[in-house]
Structure formats: C-alpha cells, structure tokens
Image (tube, rainbow, N blue to C red; front, side, top):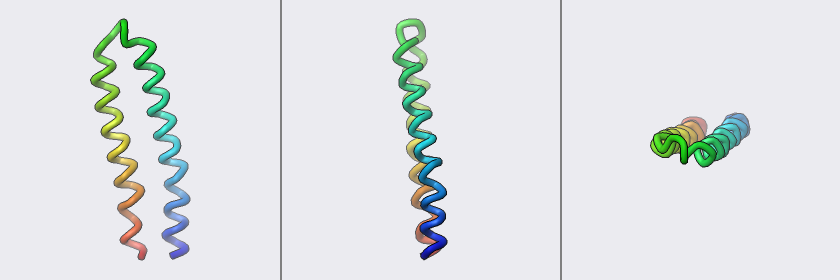
Length: 66
C-alpha cells in the first residue's frame, strides 16, 4: 500500500507537468490561430494524446500493487 502511494505521488507532478504543457499549447494556438488554422488540429491531437497517456499512467499501476 505504501508503495502504491509512492507511485501515485510520483505521477502527480508528471500529470501537473502535462497540464502545464496543455496550457502552453492553448496559449500558442490562440495566439497564432489567425495565422495558421492548422494549429487547431494539432491542439486536438495533442490534447487527446496527453489526456489518454496521463490516465493510463495514473490508473494502470494501481491494481498491480494492491
């Protein structure tokens, strides 16, 4: 149980880093969307990858160490 908590506490800064990357991409896209609308598609693609990856890395190790 303590090992599971240490795994979760290790992954929390990773998820917060990914959220900061999402906010950075939002800022970048909404600054340059008038110049290049292609950033809209890359934003959606990046958001899907980041959300799914953070969910997988956060919830996958929990049943393994119960």
